[in-house]
Image 1 (cartoon, rainbow, N blue to C red):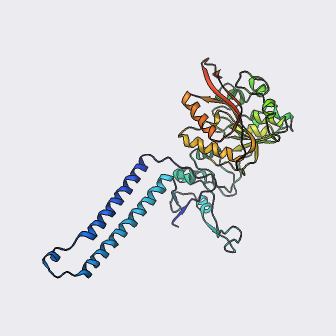
Image 2 (cartoon, one colour):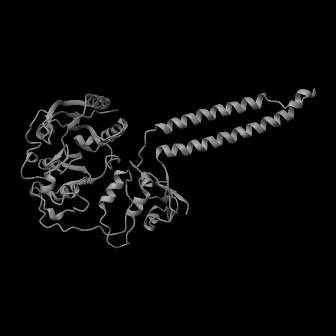
Image 3 (cartoon, helix red, strand yellow):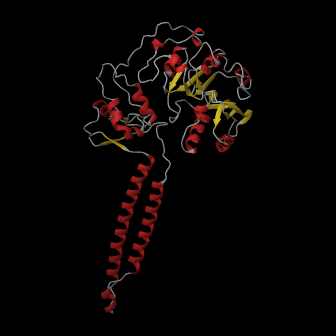
Length: 420
């Protein structure tokens, strides 16, 4: 069947920063240039020995010899270009998935096949075939992907959400669709809004497979992240007062922030929203918020949905599936801190800027600054966007885990300018 290239859709391509390999490419290019020039110099200066002894020079022989050398040079250049193109593909991560592998799941092969349009070329889009939208990095996890796509067609799906999340965190996003029925969990006791926003969620209506804790009491006793310490406790603790009362100068009251909005705040996007408490407080104020989250160490998505809120199961490496300039508010906490090279955060920030409308608010809420350099780097990055600083506070807070050590946090409310 040959090999099929994985076509990348919006946001599925992730570029790796070239390091040692990029140096190898530069060296190879330099070597090719030097070799080409040496061939050219040789071709135009060399003459056979017998020409030196022969007083009668034959120009047509020299022309023939030069033509042969030019042909060799062209072949050498073509070969070098092919090698460079292959190395470039490897550096960028654009690989191919060989569908002829014997251990590849049949369903995966079927999903990745190109399907010709029955009526030929579409006059509106110009496409002639339908291509599966699968993250190109899936090739690097072909064995896991094949395991994910191994199931009985029209039967129950394996209980493998943790495998799916592992693939997503490895850059295999979006995942291929499957032709099986997802496991259902009965959800008795769900209530309507606004009661559902702060009603405790039952342990029995979420999936605990693949998680260390098997109930919410266990989760509330752990520090899942800097922004989620006891965040599943909807009856006691700080989470019930968060965004309503401030504990430090870095904590902004929600009503004060909403009053800064130009043209009103109606829809928002929350990054790393934990258990959905930000979205719940916004819902009380008739603002619809989509909460971006993954089920890392806890059933975040099911918990948020049980409260009548909108969870978005998506990693921060994926391009946000929203049109440009649609959100009135973007809220982000320390979950915005993507590890890796500075360029990774830049790509994320530019995508956030894309979906935020002009005049909209970017609320950076208690972003943890591990050192002064990190704070300066983030400040420089934010200043590149030309946002108006409506609020900007840098202060120290005691670690939520109870270590007693003060840590530096940045909180800000920024307004996106109109760009022409």
